[in-house]
Image (tube, rainbow, N blue to C red; front, side):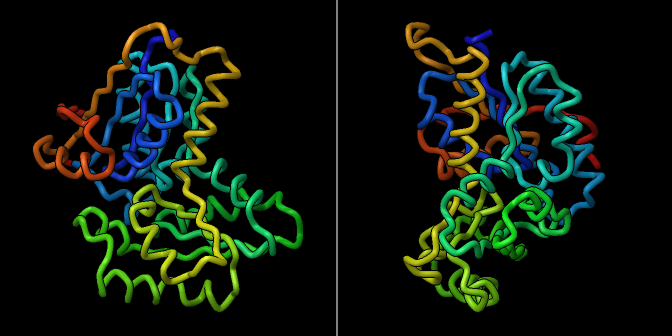
Length: 271
């Protein structure tokens, strides 16, 4: 079982930022990535629909014999984490709780904000996770729907990105936050623009980095880390959409590890 791959799922490309962190923090592990690009983006979809699509994709990864599941999609985590943990016998790691724990460790003033897709914002998943925080912690949630469009177009800087980001971040700056959670796995690619606007006084918390660290902990605690003497790991990338369209964007997100992308058929792709 230790030689089995880690299954990573996202609605599209953003989860590749999580895959990148997994490869960096667990370099001996094999990865099986599935992006549901045929039905992306999940952000504007109703939560019930997101839940249905996400569970179909996780079913496919489990059928491939993965030893752990990573839900590398904030919208999907918000919609179906509890269902996934009841449904599967393998550990399930998601992106929301690790990011919240990291933000709590980083904040100095207790003024924290989350930027996310509309679906994650409406689910209140981050606000619910912060519910157990000390009374002095104040959490704001700001949807930033255009950020995903920018990233998937390959536009991560320039006047339009800066102008849009300023408008989204203005209420958070007015609230004098000191910590910002990047509550969508696309958003780490906008780190330079966000840091430029917010300045050095605001710490950015990447859900990708925090999730990879949580996965390392889970595999260590359960004795499932892949031994170093088992040879080079193998990585496979699947998409429900067009593999030829997926490959160049995947390489932009992840790097040269994406050699070839295969098509996966999950559920009814005409939905």
